[in-house]
Image 1 (tube, rainbow, N blue to C red):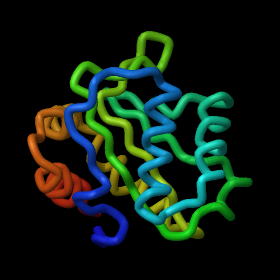
Image 2 (image 1 turned 120 degrees about the vertical axis):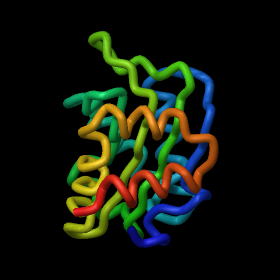
Image 3 (image 1 turned 90 degrees about the vertical axis):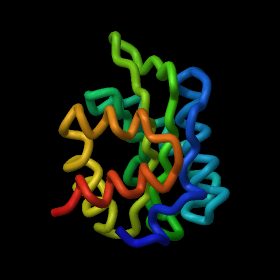
Image 4 (image 1 turned 30 degrees about the horizontal axis):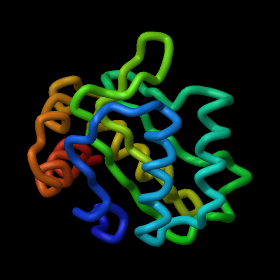
Length: 147
């Protein structure tokens, strides 16, 4: 995976629990801070969550903006937030990893595919949850998400 899409400054570990909205906002603000999206993209992430949950299973949520917010994306990027005690995504679903994504054009499909290949296996999610540094997170996604 391209280091401009995922690098150490895109990963925050050992976060305390917070609300689903706060977690989505945190992911969005990190996408903004690292130059991937305009501030308005965060609103698109929140609207997406209102329409359909971005909780994917296995303790992972992947918030992203609605299609009409794609024009707010400057560069493709991924941010990963690791929550020690999780975030309640409703309906009994707890996300320990919140992975915010923004993809230019069809790049988001490639990004989603690599992440999906990684998180489809619970043991990979367990490794990501236990990771102690951003380098380990990146290594796991690259090694386990090979297509």
